Length: 334
Image (tube, rainbow, N blue to C red; front, top):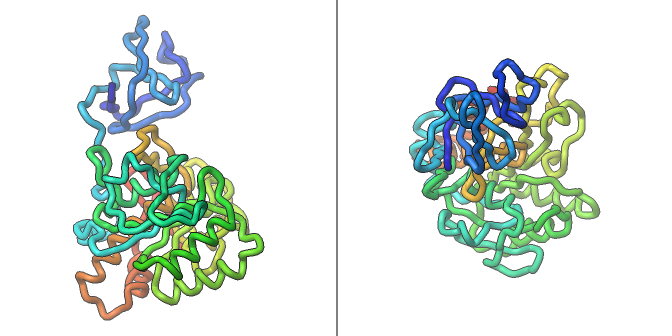
């Protein structure tokens, strides 16, 4: 059963209680509109309680059943011009370097090319982990349940990992994308980190080249308390890569955020075409920024600005947080 929170605030608990004054087992407070799937129910003196797939419990009187679970990220995203949203990313190509894309969901995307850096085979990029599919859904999903930020973009899927990201496979994927892929992306999304290792000079040269060609590269930087330091994960640490982090509201005052990070998302609970359990992290924040900038690039083509597309986006993103949703902490650095 799919449920939606209908009260202003509702506690998610480790177990049902018989007295609402007992707050000791509250793990999270969710807001009106929060959705989850009920997998078990029990009844006590306070009524019926529902357990979700995370193992937490919520009181039924704050919930209502709904026939379908639908999310439209294109409409939820805030602090960008409304005209950007109307482009839905038409005419823009996004390359996703990740764990691939599950064949079960490929029909929900406009995939124009792919490559498996592990097997060195083109157009075979099955996702055995789910991370890449989740990322793709945020950017460009177009299923019954999920509409991504830029659902009309075309995708290049480059599989560079199964579970753990390896520097050599990442290098092979980037080399293929630059030298052998017959179509060129406008945006490269890397919702991951991997060691530069012996390929450091190679990565630096490729990211510089992408920058010179006006290709935007977004990479996951750090989560939460790791934002407060001088170092970043690679490749977000590269000067020609836009670094994206994720920050919880309750730790915002813990220190100075690393000034190398261009975008910071708040504590957004993302869902995607392959997973409806809410989750967050700089991986998914990175995808949201890539999707938002895809809208901006499409808008530039419509406006016929005298600025180059890169200058146009650089100018625009100083005015808004491209990764801010209605339940997010509105923080933006550039």
